Length: 72
Image 1: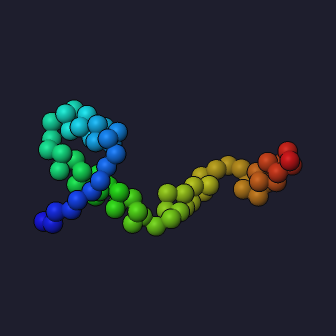
Image 2 (image 1 turned 135 degrees about the vertical axis):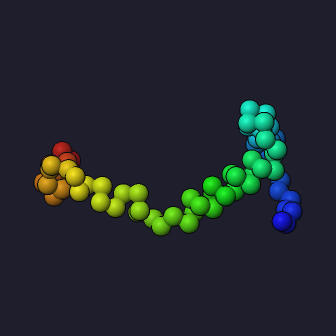
Image 3 (image 1 turned 60 degrees about the horizontal axis):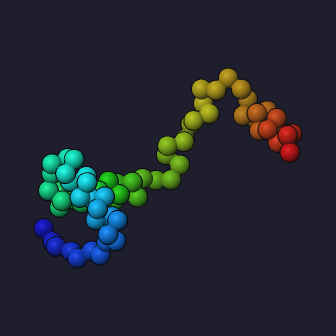
């Protein structure tokens, strides 16, 4: 495992301390989990969350779009 040096503003250090105290976990473990979550979030391909979102709708997508645009 490698060590890195990171400069954080006091407000983030205070927020981190509150999380560490609430979770009763070491600060390094909380930081590792936060970095792992961030890396996982960044690796997600764009649009995966919304692909096929309109599939189950009962309204025609084009008709819905035209109705919304008619308000302009």
